Image (cartoon, rainbow, N blue to C red):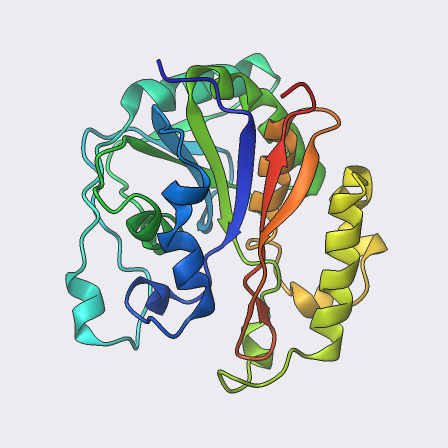
Amino acid sequence: MGLRLNETFYVSHGSPALAVDDSIPARKFFSSWKERFPTPPSAILVVSAHWDTRVPTVNVVDRNDTIYDFYGFPESMYKLKYPAPGAPELARRVKELLIGSGFEHVNEDMNRGLDHGAWVPLSLMYPEADIPVCQLSLSSNKGPSYHYNMGKALAPLKDQGVLIIGSGSATHNLKAMGPRNSPPAPWAQAFMTWLKTSLLEGRYEEVNEYEEKAPYAKTVHPRSDHFLPLHVAMGAAGENAKAKVIHDSWDAGSISCASFSFTAANA
């Protein structure tokens, strides 16, 4: 069991090229992770936008394979490996906590490794790949409050030193992408202004209702998969948690690479 952790995180993982492209501003942020957050976790739980199932599912493996769930990138990308140990005990604890909190069905996947929403940022944050990692799927057929409550159920894991990360993208409309250095689209900026203000002022219930409350919500997130990991991280931080912007950059005109921490109120 590791030291108790007081923070949960939502990170925008951006393009898979983050793993190799030094020109992406967020790469420096992820590479300096251990300088900013030096307490080593006992294990890592990732909820990634790229694993979407009908009911919550955990991967129960001894060693994580590297999943190349992207196409059209340089061949070198498909040779990268992030062979982090699995965390089967953590996976079963996640299942136990969710079922104990009223989530009736939680499945186990005995084969799945880490998708790029998990291994790409982790390869920069913890490049040694020596910390056990478990993935928990999201269920985009359910809403934000469902995922917020999922996070609340997982909050006790922080007491065991488990680092809880939601990995997605603060804005995610790939059809609206522009050139790399193009300025942020006005609708994306409006959404991000709303999101940062809402989080920093602790208006989490409004964020859970973002589809009705946020400007340009459907334009920014035509699908909810890249935003729902945020709700898990919010819920896992606990009541009255304090949000902080820990990184803020843009890519391709409409993709916000903003990342947030959530610190427990009693920390």
